[in-house]
Amino acid sequence: EDKVVQSPLSLVVHEGDTVTLNCSYEVTNFRSLLWYKQEKKAPTFLFMLTSSGIEKKSGRLSSILDKKELFSILNITATQTGDSAVYLCAVAPYNNDMRFGAGTRLTVKP
Amino acid sequence: DSGVTQTPKHLITATGQRVTLRCSPRSGDLSVYWYQQSLDQGLQFLIQYYNGEERAKGNILERFSAQQFPDLHSELNLSSLELGDSALYFCASSVGGIKGDEQYFGPGTRLTVT
Image (tube, rainbow over all chains, first blue to last red; front, side, top):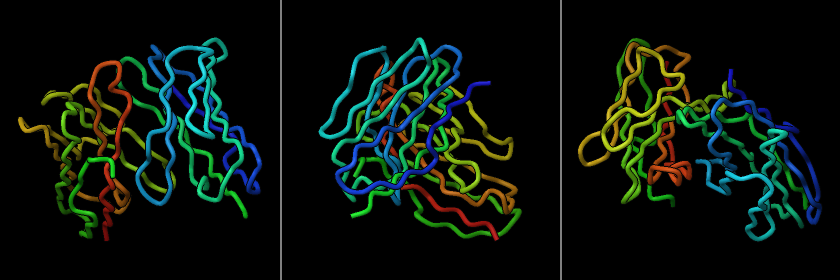
């Protein structure tokens, strides 16, 4: 059965710290992996990754995919309190049955 | 604001009843996805429509059904409601094709079944 596992489940850091969130997956007919940020509302799109080894970057956030080892990481540098959220990893196979991980709850303390 | 709209924002109803949730995708998006998010289950994919046709089915109960209309808005129908159906229901839309995985979520409908 397809599955997406995120770790850690929760993380507490202080402003300025760098964090690495992990996502491993087992999916048949992998097409892409996506990262979302969810605060107290709907998930917002961060990155879509389809190729191994190519880093996607947006400001202090970056992500990379390893299709051989079946995982992705999301890095956040110089964290701010506004980064506090649940970060969701999702995998989209070719049959479009998106699978989401349970999420990592990040708390950034001032 | 993602450009995806959902109505109503909140819905309170009794067990055994039937409700309809509505979603309007972003302008230009052909795909609509429905998700259920509950505290113990996380975000669960229910169903996807692309340009009016069902494209993929996830963990959708037989009591639930959906459709996408010619104007591309979509409705999710939930019937014979049970207490366990209480959840946040999200609609998301995307362009479709390889870029279709970039989904933009609506604000959600919070359903409470009493």
